[in-house]
Length: 294
Image (cartoon, rainbow, N blue to C red; front, top):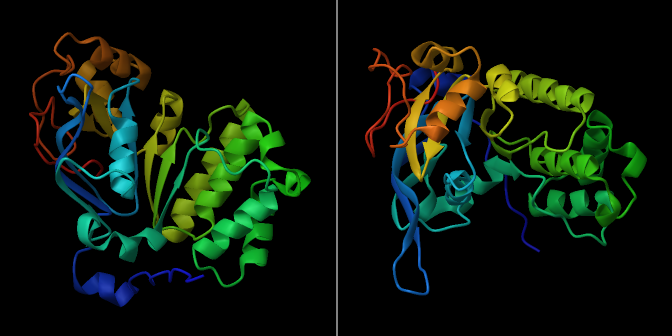
């Protein structure tokens, strides 16, 4: 088996000599799916955004808004109908294998092989990611994420909350520079969910990693995210820092902002006029590009 090689992160001297490229740069990203009657369905409609390195950006929207399709294109699992994706400065259409070892993904809705134990699953992925000390890395993550009790249990026999923690451990195996998270605290009790959020905060502080977080937990988004992208019907309809969105919509919580946007007839939100600055733009026209975080 040929193991992937994890590309070293830029040294501090490299970072000082030139401004870092964004962790994610998307321009005109579109995905249409064919239908039996020949009329394609547009799941993602010419979106454009950048995510700067080192922050946490929330990708929010109701069911069917296009979040999962967008993440799948960022990962290279789906080919865009149109548009471009750059991850850590690398064109995903041409050189995705050069950057995949530097990123990872976690979702409690993606099942690991049921017959393999948790340890076996993590070991397989560790080898796929090209790690040199797989056994130690698996053991360390098991201790950090409280997996030790069921490390040798078949993955198919785990509870929903346990599967969520195992999915996160899988995503952290290669110490990724870019971490894409889909509902990382789904099915967890409040205490464990809080522990996971604290772990993610510490991981970002320790490594300087960038996190793109898709979540329906608005309290989680307010706590973790520097910037937010709001999607509806395949388009980004608003974006900004959580505090800026609260002020723009005159709401006390991000959940209220989410509901305003989700229920707006035209899908463009009900916020006030545009405010100055890259994080303070109001409803956006299709394809407009601004930073997603300060």
